Length: 420
Image (cartoon, rainbow, N blue to C red; front, side, top):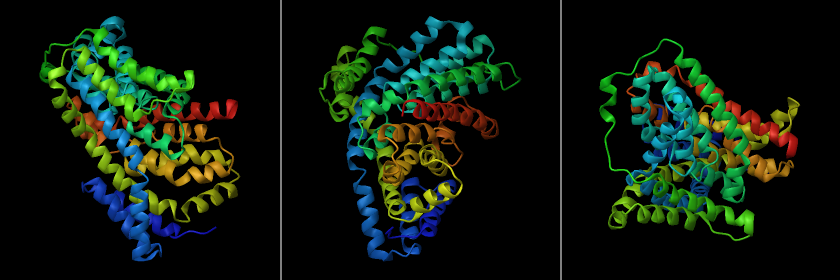
């Protein structure tokens, strides 16, 4: 097999990027520098390395365009209060006795309709803290319920990670979302069970001081709040249902505009779109950096060496899909970056091994939720901060989060073995 860079160079570049990310250097720059060093050490030469980095970043542009436009939906859901209204309605409907379940389901649905997982947790957190204080739940249980629900919603959402994976395998976004529906439900159940178990243990209790972040706001009706997301789902579902293709580039911002209009905020549409852009610009820049190192890894011998190793261990080729998602997401501490690198790098290998593109995309996506919340990523700190949790306490949740992600990954693998 021909390749431009050695496995050692690709791994070294990734390790350098990880170390710098842990040192709090801007992640996009870490990935770009790691790609540059990895390519040169990998024997590609400066010209080849730079051109490969540029082509790798260029391959991200279709995903980045869709992610940029998805910011209109995310901005509308957050700024109109629709996301909070949906969450409150779910919690109120299920009641305080089912608080853990309500919190998990609320976060899942907020994430599933297109709000990023960290923003979903931050959105639900004030409601979760208020109900947790009333029912005597500890911080660990409500945060795990939110994170677990978010992980479940993330693999069935039109979020950046789903868009990136669907693009890498040239699959319809809706199909990739639906493929992990059952794994998502199983992850939700695991989140509820684990969070309920934590609720019975001693832990840091919620006090009145923790409720300071909860703000009263004039929220839209539930019917108005849900119209935008429902329109997005309908537009994306037209392709498999009626053969009518409406690209996410159109469906996602259209849903945001509809949400803004039906909630009576037409005059604020510019403000909301600017806010939405501010929420996705970081992810978009991260994907550019991700593309550079993905280009180096994809052009290296790494994928061939990993495949050879799996064959030597007598492991089936499809295991590469979830395994790559787990490893790359853990390395980057990001679902989006991990899923993107894994999909971009190993898509050709998986397809040549006979693994169906849709199944491979689903398994990589599920795998990317296992260890994506390590401390060298922003998600770890953003979610901990949403409930004012110390780093030491936040660290204790990582094994539980991994168990939730592993649940969806195992179920995704089982479904592949059963129905392909």
